[in-house]
Each structure stands twice: as C-alpha cells, then as structure tokens.
Length: 190
Image (cartoon, rainbow, N blue to C red; front, side):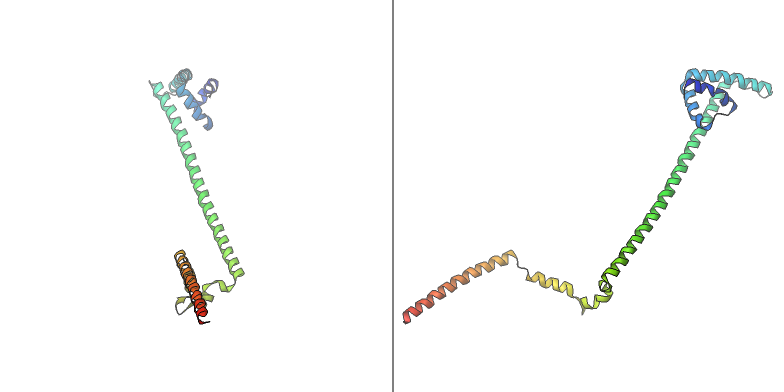
C-alpha cells in the first residue's frame, strides 16, 4: 500500500469503514511507516477527541493508546479472518481428498470385479479349484507338485555328468581291452 492509499483510508479507519480486503495492508503500512502513523495519530486525536466532546462522553486522555488498541483490534480481525479462510480451505480440501479416495476405491473395485468376471468368462469353469480340485488332488496328494518332484529328479547335476563321463571313458577302455582280448583269443585258436 502506498502513502497516498494509506492516507486515503485514515478517515474510513476512524469511522470503522475500511474495506475488509484493505485492512491488512492498512495496518501493516501504519505500523511500518512513521510518517503515515503520525498523520493517523493527528486525525484520530482531533476527530475522536471532538466526537467525545460533542457527545459529552468521558474524554479519554490517552488517545494514542486508544489508536494502538484500534489498530491491534483490526490486526486481530484480519488474522482471525485469515485463520477462518485457511481452516475452511483445509476442511474443504480434506473433504475433496476423502471423496476422491472413496471414488478412486470404488473405481478400483469395479475394475477388479470386471477383470475377475472377464477371467471367469474367458477361462471357463476349469480355472477354479472347485471344478478341478478332485483331478489335482487325489488321495490328499497334490499331483502337480508330485510331477514337479519327478521332473526335478530327472535333472542331472554337473557332478553326476562328470561321473557319467568318467564311467563312459572307463567303459570305453574296458570295451577296447575286451575287443583286444577277443582278437588275441581268436588269433590263438586259428
């Protein structure tokens, strides 16, 4: 707020008619600008003092203290209005967040239900354990797990492969020796 604007609101301040949207700027300017504050004190002292004399009410000797109280009251009203605005905004935002969360959860629930229904339609009744449970679990044994164990037994480790190769080499050597023995045996019998 400029000096001219602040000075233009001196009379409305004394009459209690400063617009709500200008009160905060007016109070801040008056507390920070000595020149405008002195002018406000002069007008306030003259006008309020004359009003008190005209109405024959008790004349206050410390009009400067009254002025400071009025500025402080206006400052408190501004802070209270700001606090109410912030509180109202916070409440409205909280309501929007709660409503948004509820709507989002509802949408997720509908999407999940749609996916489950689509899965049920596409895969048919064989997808569910209720229909194939008897086939999968005979005699309280899980046949799928049993087949996986059999497959695991068929897998050969590297150690077993090396041992098999060594046995193959040993068998090859024995076959060659046996072949030589047979060849020597035939040669001696002819």
